[in-house]
Image (cartoon, rainbow over all chains, first blue to last red; front, side):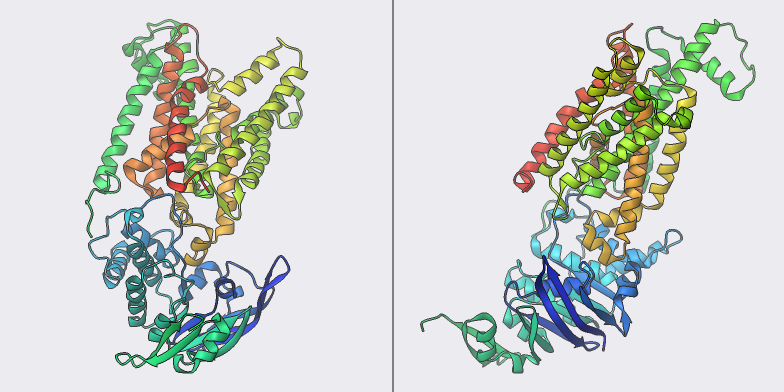
Length: 256
Length: 360
């Protein structure tokens, strides 16, 4: 098990947001976390990447309790991509991606030629070659997000957590970013809004509602009309995508 | 898709950066000589050179044909004063950079946040009431440091809403903290008999002036500045990452809690020391990090040394102005720096409001 979550509970102002969640993520798998707004997805992920400290329970990476690791040690095990945050201070795309190397760099005596090579390779991987000297703040949403993918990749952590990273991107960029991540030899754990994106890329789907895990399984097992109705309260028609051979979810307006 | 390829900041190459720093050093050197020459009594460059060479080498290389008062003005009054101007300018700029990283907001600086006022209230209280007298000559510095600590905690508490410091909150925090500590200082002045020396000293603290500079005070300030500068140069990579926000910095591997404590300790210590030698000089920490950033970029390994040079040189020049404009009288240097800094502050507020919709 790459990542193991053991009964994490977390509350804000004595309101229970994450209610005893346990789950396991296998090495090399691409796992999607699905659930309605406010179900605690993001809070759960923030408990895993330590922005929040769980009230009880713990997360283990390769059997090691994350609470025992320093930020630097954890950064080498797990990279995190969040929604693009507002930075007021501009920097170049290259410098932005280079910040992901922090955990690997010492105070003195770094092999900067090698460091630069790693960053350049990552920018090429996400299709941002030739943008190195561009201002980060001048980029489009998708370009920014791809730069942040590069920043996560240069961290060279075997596990990557995505906290609703593509919500505000248009659908083309969402597929583009998921494809980039799918190509990497990484364990990916991501909260995903678009069910068809999840169906297309995930090996395993975790359904979450009201702070609890409702069900876990393959996209075929999870994306059935009853379960989707239970989660989101909408009717759907699920067919099979003839190209990807994955479930294809079509929503039916209420009253039809 | 590809937009215009104007570089983010002009001096990308390290050779250009080095040239800029050397150029600033040259400007600094020229301003230094001018600052010794100009003032209520004009000096001759030849004499200045001879006095400085004799003093620096400790030998009589040039025969002293000048009057003792000339040497006194050059070596005992003007030289420490000008060096103090540099240290104060560079130090305030460093404090500004630190406050900006801490709040992730380019409007932050010790003066805007009211920390300078807190430090000056602390210094004035020591002078007025003589507490902390066990510390002797360090009493004023300790008082200024304590005032800075209290005000920084207060300012950050007010300015931070849900882990974010918006431009609006920051300016409001600054108004509140400055008003509070300004009132404390005024109260202490009102409380003491008017016309006394203590009151004069207090008003010197409130306006910002270098007229009290001496080698003795310069020594403390220069050592404190040098230590803080070296510490910050060791932390530049972490400061870069912290600009991304505390959460992101933590996931990239920075120990944000420890780093922020370092920043706060260094910034308050330095603000306290600087205010204890020069009083409150406004807007230096706001203006020069911003200007330098637009020339050499955001990376702190480049930004910190370059902006020290720019901020330090500005204050040397501002000091010349303060002595020349109304000669033979002297303007407090805080007045000169405010004339440049305040309009710049307004420009920054306008700019940031445009971007963040009133900071909401």
